[in-house]
Length: 432
Length: 88
Ligand SMILES: Cc1cc2nc3c(=O)[nH]c(=O)nc-3n(C[C@H](O)[C@H](O)[C@H](O)COP(=O)(O)OP(=O)(O)OC[C@H]3O[C@@H](n4cnc5c(N)ncnc54)[C@H](O)[C@@H]3O)c2cc1C
Ligand code: SF4
Image (cartoon, rainbow over all chains, first blue to last red; front, top):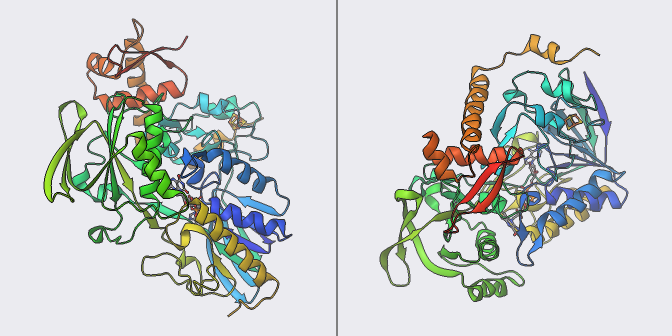
């Protein structure tokens, strides 16, 4: 059975860009529907530790924003949902079909008490801790999730029924089915964000094989208060690392993996993590292997200098290979670019500063064929005058869906998307 | 009130992998908790005692810590490995 609904704007993706654009439009009185494929809104930002260059706590900025959006009377949010297709019938008339997948938990009555989680016998890798630790099949995704309610991972559920018997609010409901919704909107914002480079595509770095080689996102999780372990530890043997290496440009500026462009944030987030590591592990040495440091934003060069002053070592070097030594330490072979010689160095943990890639599947949603640029990001047709405008009139792009960028630029981009959308809704001249 | 689990059970099979996974986790959980009955231990000590790869012990031990059956004790004399104990 399918129902139909009407809104002014459909925002696809509930990361920081989608949430920001939604709030701007909702505050101007427009009715907004946010469709988020994950169990929670907040995107990548809600999982970050502190943010460069201010070192503000990421969750402290994201959480109030997502709660404001969730409570806003002009915003409706469908999490764990997908947009199947969008058809532009005429200016200000888009029809879309959406599917809401079942959580097997009644969204209204779940209190997020986690009793179900406690009773659930199944443990699988926790995707929100980037697989460093386990989670249950009945679970509240993470402590600051929005909505902070449980879901049943039906693929991994043993159908024991323990959650349903234990739930004090009686809200587990295995009869839930997916729900199809037809919507009519006047305009669309694409805010589908980015995906992370898969480091197993560069086997010489040893990710997956050597457990003390981790991604920057795994290190990001190790640095938050809701971390997977009790401190920053090596996943192989639980040792506190004291000699950590960063490999920058892992999967960026690299033709061989099909991503020749700079990911824009890896230099800076690595410099940030290095500083945070020196705070968490005062005895540790941190070495950053880089090709070029890109610290072009406001306050970024000072932030880089600050890391040097704190004792972070910077080596202009291209990593050839990572090998595992007995005991789990890692040997890095690298070309010292300044001296033009091949060198080796041992570290006890290696962090791959993985790059940012365009998310697939956005263009196929649109019957009118949404154009992508040569790197598969949504094409900005009129970059200088109307940076959020796509090739389809009434469809705008916000944040990293249009290219790699940091949070301040994502917020600015969301601002542009919301004001261009508002102009279009007023019948402005963005309709071509 | 009737339980909805009985309705879904008629429609869905539990994959063998899910059943195997529960057994494997429960087995390692028991082994780890048993090693901690005597005194607090580190990951390498537990791994050696139950003859299991260290990374598997780390993953399971940290999961047990997350769900509250294990907690951190002191750090060893070299300031390298934490010791973990059963949570009372
Ligand atoms: C390790 C790491 C550390 C970082 N640290 C910093 C930092 O310190 N400071 C800083 O400024 N920046 C940092 N960044 C960059 C920052 O994460 C991004 O700038 C920001 O998250 C971009 O937000 P977004 O909303 O554009 O994209 P995302 O965060 O990717 O959000 C996109 C959302 O859209 C959803 N979505 C995707 N496809 C669909 C679909 N088809 N339908 C419905 N929903 C969909 C996703 O589930 C997600 O919720 C870091 C990045 C990484 C990888
Ligand atoms: S589903 Fe029930 S038991 Fe689980 S968190 Fe929600 S209210 Fe608590």
